[in-house]
Amino acid sequence: MSQKVKVALAGLGSRGKDTYAKTAKLFPEKMEIVAIADIDPAKVEEVAKEYQIPKEACFSSAEELIAQDKLADAMFITTQDKQHVAQAIPALKKGYHILLEKPISPDLDECREIVKVAKECNRKVIVCHVLRYTPIYSKLKDVIDSGVIGDVVSVMSIENVGYWHQAHSFVRGNWRNSKTTSPMILQKCCHDMDLLLWLTGKTCESVSSFGSTYLFKEECAPKGATHRCMDGCKVKENCPFDAEKIYLKHHKIGAENGYNQWPLDVLTLHPTVESVTEAIKTGPYGRCVYYCDNDVVDHQVVNLNMTDGSTISHTMCGFTATGSRYTKFMGTKGEIIADMTENTIKITEFGKKDTEVIDVSKLATDFSGHGGGDNRMVEEFLDMIINNTEPTNRTTSVDQSVESHYVALGAEQSRVLGGAVVQLETLRKGNC
Image 1 (tube, helix red, strand yellow):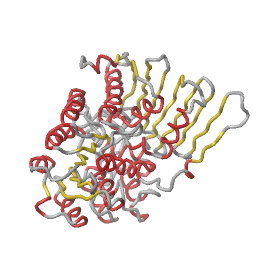
Image 2: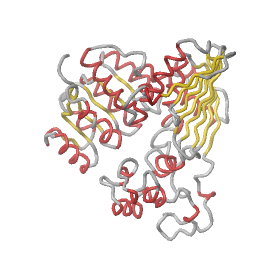
Image 3: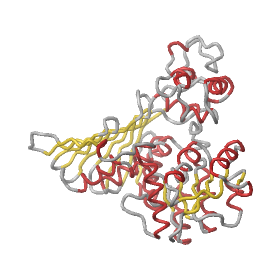
Image 4: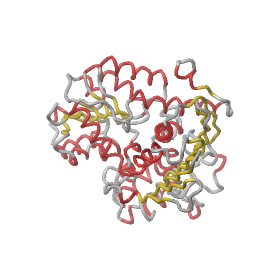
């Protein structure tokens, strides 16, 4: 295939509208948006105008789009977690290649089914584990594979979710309740599970996990807290989760400081001080964090026992000042520390006085969108279709991505069972 890839967008939320659609402007010689779908007519109207999509190629749902005769070469599916597979499978059967937002599904039967259908249809399905494509993790993979620290014996990993991100997405927002979406460890950390497996080149044998909703529940509400932040709450002055503090006054993302991107564009299509204020007054993002219908954890630890006897520990925590990742790899000949906040990789070989420091900021110029991963991922997906090539070592095909889901959902099963060890082979075989 030598011509540009025609793309249909199913889902125009923050990822679909503001991340993936914009890659058509970055790579106009490779990508053209030809059809769009979303349940919000305002978003459809706006994206249609921006990308000159004719009315007959605009649809009110992903299902309506998929029901049409094949309209494009590829479909980007960026709807809600539990919708992904039910939309992707008929799209595959129509002949679409799929760029699928993570996670694949919180249902392992669905995960196994999409792998099967993708092979039967001979279509490419790439899951959006965008961190594989970032300069820091691409370089880290090369360093580990060089053998400079020998065999990796133990790994310590942490994802700092960030206090306001936890409140926004996982208490007030779309991913707050596992009954309607995915468990926290899958939704937020399937990135991490995928990274840890890929970077080490190892396979997980069993997992154990602990975690809970420690703070964001009604019994923890301070006396004087109201159900909405702007309804005369008597404790808002000392509450870091106050909606006005986060969405209006925050020094980085507050509308009063001139900011108008994510997460504000989740509250209102065109963020201004006025529109954000109105959204806080009347919408879900103005609810008190202690009086929401959330049930996902706000902290969790996962222990991975690998088939070669090595071990990995991962911590997810919403009680951090900023959102970032930090990982320490301990090997038979040395250690590596990768820090996304500092954008550095530090290599210390045993017996050597000096530590080598790799300044990742000098390795690339684009660090937008998940540390520079979003645009690189889409471009590689487009190149695979144009050149009819197979996934590279960096690419997360759906059959590779499923492994991260086994780990995450095994961890959730363990957490629910009070930390019981879960053997992953039982999940791989469908005996769960």
